[in-house]
Structure formats: C-alpha cells, structure tokens
Length: 370
Ligand SMILES: Cc1ncc(COP(=O)(O)O)c(C=O)c1O
Image (cartoon, rainbow, N blue to C red; front, side):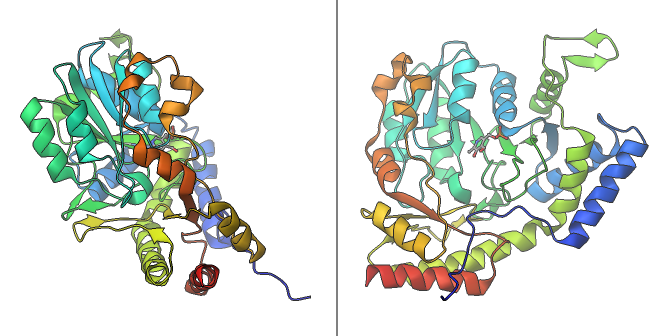
C-alpha cells in the first residue's frame, strides 16, 4: 500500500548539530553554577532589543507574566476598563481580570483576525484606560488607525506580540507602537525556548524601570525593595537557548513567508477563504489560518492525506467559563469572533516543513475544493 505522507502541524525536534550546541551551552552554565541572571540573560535582552529595534528589553518568566507586569507598570486606575479582542489566546484577558481591571471584549476582522477598529471605537468610553492589541497569528494590527483613536482619548496601549516576533506594520516592528510590547517564547512560537519564558519591550525608560522592579521583588539592591513585586525572571538556561535560536529567527520567518505566499496563491483559486493582508502588514505567519464552512470534512480530508491541522481558537473568550462572571462581557462584540471560532482551521507552516511539503498542502486544498 502507498505510504501516506505525514506532515505534522508542529515539530520541535532539533537538528543534531543544533542539539549538540545547545546541550554544550547548558552544560557550561551548570558547570559555572550560573542559573539566575548573569551574562546569558543580559546578552539575550541586548540581542532581543536589537532585533526588535526597541530601546529596552526585559526578560521575564513567560508571556502571561509579561502582560500582567506590563499592565501593572502602566499605573492605570483599578476598576477602569481595558479592551481586549474576543478572539485570542486568553492571557491578555486573564491579565486584565487578575490585575483588578474591567474586561471589555472587542470583535475582530476576518481578513487578518486582529482587533476590529469599528468595534473598538464603539467600546471606548470615559472609563477606558488601556487597550491590549494582539498581533494574532503573526499578523500586525493596523497600528496607525489604532494610535489615532488611543491618542485622541488618552488610552494606553499594550501590544501582545507573543505570536509576532519580527512582524511589521508600515515598516515598523510591532511592540514599538504602543507603550509596551510583550512576548512569549513558549516552545512553539516563532522564537521558542525549551520551556517557559517571555519578554517585555518598551522605548520608555520609566516603564522599563517599573517593570524591572515588579519582575524582581521590587528590588533595587540586595534587601532594598521599593515595592511589593513578584518573581518573574528569565532564567539563564532559557536565555542561552534563546541566544542560540535567535540567530535563525529571520531565516525561519522568511521561510514562513515563502510558504504562506504559496498557500495564498493556491487558496485564491479555490472556494476557501484565507488571510487578506494589506501591503502595510508584514506578517511572520506564526500560523496560517483558513476559513471554511466545511471545516470538519476538510480536516478529515487533509488528515487522510497525512496533513495535520489545528483549530485556534474553538471558543471566543466571551464563551469561556473563566470569564462567565465578568459583568462587562455584556458589552461583547462577537459576530466575527464567532464565525472565526466555527470556521477557522490552521494549516501546517514553519521551519519543520520544506517547500515540497507546502506544495503538497496547497495541492490538497485545491483538490478538496474542486
Ligand atoms: C497571543 C498570546 N498571548 C499570550 C500568550 C501567553 O504566553 P505564555 O504561554 O508564555 O504565558 C500566548 C501563548 O500562547 C499567546 O499566544
């Protein structure tokens, strides 16, 4: 019987040469008993602020902490309203609720799955203090339109760039439009560690210094603590992995872009919907989502061809139990978020695939729709 191809949705295995180098870096840290802080962390913060063209970068324990610390650094009034897109991984909403702010959920666009400007405009009122935008699936939000609105009303912006390492809007790297940008380096991200880690970037010194204190027990010197903070430090081992892997980030992003352009071409000639990005949006395609009313049968068809897909996300935040007792959810704008949850399917994309794999996926999509 003919062997069916197997294209995994994600594959985190390393080439032997990269694995050997990583293990030798980690062994060196263990021999030197260098576990917290130190040169690897400093080096990564430097590397990442250069990569992201941001003045400051602070390594933290994960992307969710990055959001919580970013919000706390902004010093916005407790109980004020913070707007978050209804269709995203839930961390931005968790950060809002855990920080003691009111969660307000906005709808998204179906062209790029980022926050809808129209919905955002309708939700802003006197109590709105901040907005968390998410550059979802690697697609940058329209930061110029968003800035016009937030500048008008004096609203702070956090950019959640956890899925968008290197994405640009109008040539400027995400994380530099708002007050603060946050990143996750969860292993599956475009830049992923071998465990949990994250970062905060900003161009504002005061925000950087505040975040730095919060993430390290409010400490300014040994046993000199200025505020009750927390422990959310990037550890040396993860920093050394990230210092090694960041060298390939641009190369891998370029590969994703090439794969995405092949997929877009194939899908345009089918009856399936996919991303419609503007020339201002430079996506790094953390994921490649399509929309199909026949998602279940398409997924089964692709699985039979050995193509493994994922559903991100099956539920809008407004339908999650975690947020069911949040009053402000009555303000939810949900139409497109619901459509996305019902129809979205993410195709395999990333450095674990070669161009032949992507051509195979593109052909499979075309044969389904014919
Ligand atoms: C958009 C977004 N924000 C925040 C996070 C949270 O990151 P972490 O898992 O590192 O806490 C993720 C992780 O999946 C994410 O995709």
